[in-house]
Length: 170
Image 1 (cartoon, rainbow, N blue to C red):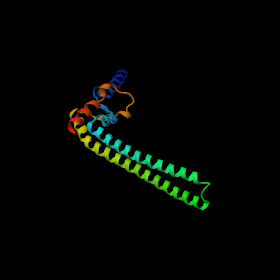
Image 2 (cartoon, rainbow, N blue to C red):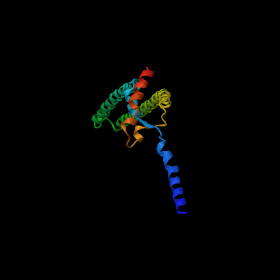
Image 3 (tube, rainbow, N blue to C red):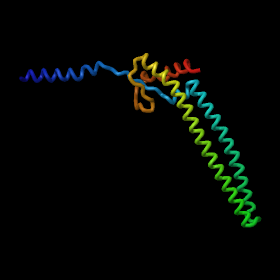
């Protein structure tokens, strides 16, 4: 009976642990931020967004300077003009300031929407390329580098993907 228990125990251990040690899932990781910043298409998107952002910032800085000048003029005239006229000027200034803030928020929201649309389109273009690579290399899973705590550099496919994307997207 003792031999039968040992035999069953050994059989169960071998049956449960041996097949899993021979099977290997191929899991790799990809640094998507690196893909965006180092592919030609990603660089193009980043450059366009940066130009748009700088243009908007210059407009806002100009308008802020104009508003600051108006505010300074109102402060200088504070003791010279009547209280009624001062209220009118302050009210007009507050309206202009409110209008400026709304416009700035509108531009920021539009910029964020544009950024989201551009990157969504970019990822729609590169996803089939990555899927093709995954199927050719028999890869079971691709993780984003941000979600990986520690992994071997051999598991990083970022450089290969960047080269493939640059070759396929012009």
